[in-house]
Length: 71
Image (cartoon, rainbow, N blue to C red):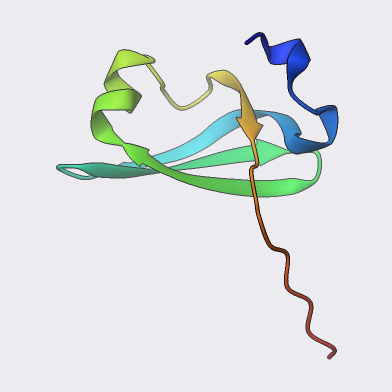
């Protein structure tokens, strides 16, 4: 599957702002035009993808449910 075959509405182009690396899981904050998107991925993936602060990335969002609450 190529990046182009994924629904464009689920893609956020951005730059990694912060990585909080843990022994197994890491939090990756991506600064996008829509705001900060945070992903929790394995620390192994962070290393294998060679992710660093300042890397240009695409955050893909997959969700089976979106909840809404009235303020």
